[in-house]
Image (cartoon, rainbow, N blue to C red; front, side, top):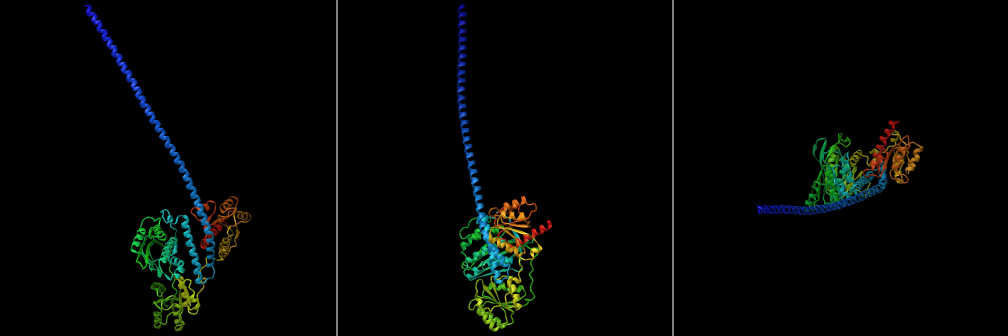
Length: 598
């Protein structure tokens, strides 16, 4: 019994010891697990901290790079803005520098056209004006943008749609090249189909530029023959518009089929062309891009060594008051003989004479002309070319005068050729080619009347400048202009309108004048020494109680210059060189305004 009791005690102690050992074992394991977990999570936390630190470092570097990039962008933007500002300043200075002498050139030419001139003299003066206008248009295009960027045709750009006469525009373009064509022995001819309206509404300047580029291109590659401009009616569309087809054809060297394909590929593109490629020149690219702007298309056709033809279409609005030229009863039914070896010129003249209800017959040579004269000696007028094969116009006229002394002879002369002056008794009238319709008509009427001499242009021309203008629109005018030649031109123009303007040379002199005397109108230049026109205008608007009308007359013509003048307090704006008609219209407008304010 005792033994069993001892065994029970020992067994209990062993179990208790085992229990304690097991408990301590679990405690050790738990402790070890806790220690392992601590260090394991500590390691994870450290790695996470390192990762966060690394990401923070990366973000910091990115922030620094972004800040650096933004700083560089701001610097680049500032440099670009400075460059643009410097470019705009340079372009403005170039524009002003070119327009100032152009003002003198075109101003004097404009004044010249207001004097008594012969037809020939008036043609030369008008050619100077037209060439000046074309040059100014080209200068504007180049200065506003690079010449090819300008023709990029951005859709927001508006056309300058105004009413114009199609016939006059074509004749003006041909006049520009008259001397060059005459020196090259080329005839310049145009024909407008009967159904084509001549009074149109559209962008005359861009249309003329297209024609000028194509005619110039044709002359460059033509060594004999002619340059022909034809106008055909295609269709009438809604809103009083007509679609017209224009052809500029030459008898030059033409193009190979490879060049035609290359050129056609460029001209048929539906996006603006920014640089010339292969055989494509800048002039043709500008034509193509301008036609895109005007909603037209252009194509080319050519035969090598037989010439080339460029055809383009434009849609114009027609004038609500179409022009109906009066046909003089004095020339109705009169008989005229046309002598020229160029069939295109004969065809053009025959159509014009028939449109005036005259009877026309043609001769392609001097021999044929003499045969016609022997059969029809009752002619009222003979019109002959000067340069023809076998027999020239002077020799022919000598033969005609011997047998038919009473028939007036009109000579078609090449610009610059004065050979006919050695024989004043042969010709009753002389007209330079290319032939202008209104001059031809005036001279035909004059010769049919048997005047026997060329009338002065002043007998038929209505002057833009009339001394009675100031009586109808009385104004006291102050002119602010630092260039002495421009002062002289503006002064002469105003004198011919009947005004006696006061001249000043800078803004300070303007302020002195207006403080002592009231002026209705101030013609204010912008760039002047000591005080410019903008500053003088601002001072006048602040200091004077009785305000004058201030009109900017400036060579600053870049985009935004007009708005700058108006913001400074000016009432109106005229660009140099001064257009006589524009100046007269502006003075009339503000004279009426001043009279209503009294």
